[in-house]
Amino acid sequence: MTATTAKKRFGQNFLHDRGVIQRILSHIRPQAGDSLVEIGPGRGALTEGLLQAAGRLTAVEIDRDLIDALTRRFGPSLSLLVQDVLTVDFRALAHASQGPLRVVGNLPYNISSPILFHLLPVADQVVDQTFMLQKEVVDRMVASEGSKVYGRLSVMLQARYTLERIFLVPPDAFSPAPAVDSAIVTMWPLPQAQCQVKDWVIFERLVADAFSARRKMIRNTLVAYEGRLDLAAAGVRETDRPEAVAVQSYIQLANQLTIERTG
Image (cartoon, rainbow, N blue to C red; front, side):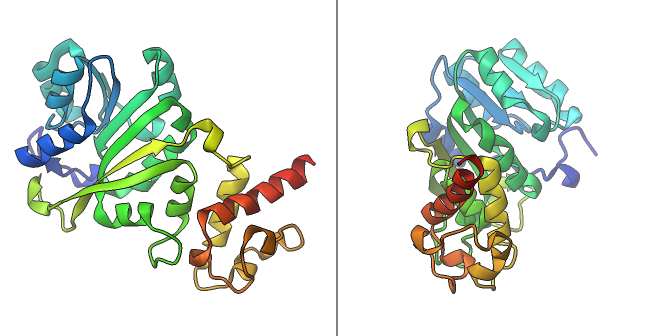
């Protein structure tokens, strides 16, 4: 196995299609002075264009076999963090950059949801996030209530970001080609004034409980909160399934618990 051979344990699929790369860069529009962070630079397909436009870049790469090639190719303008992205302190990166981050990357599909949840608490330190993900994951991220793929990921992310699926990417744009289609998604954190969740720990717990059994009615999946929630006040019927409940209603329900705790 060579240094640039894709490793299954890291979920690596290296992007090589120049047309797709340019389309991503045209969408991101990196600028000089941007505090860019790239997750998983791999062989540097996106890194090159990002650096040409921004002049400097921080990249997070777990595969040590790729580090020497990246360092030789890009030199000191590329600051490499050789670690698991789930251990990266993005708030500290923003503080060191003296400004909010722009986060980009071709995320490893095997841990894409954990990465998205890892970034959620530092959304206040982010300008935008543009990621390549499995199309199925992006569909879940942007799904509306009533959709079969609407779930915990949809609710948690839509409570904090405006999301947009930008375009699809076919398997042959990668080496090796994945067995699934991919998609580009951009996430813009909502301004703090528009974030209505009062306590994210409570919100996360309630949403997880609600979707713990998708086929059950909401009164049953939230039975642990019986007597503490006013479903009707949040526009929810007791017989609704979890996927029928809007993001705003989940926020209202969680905020009822927050008020109860602090009131």
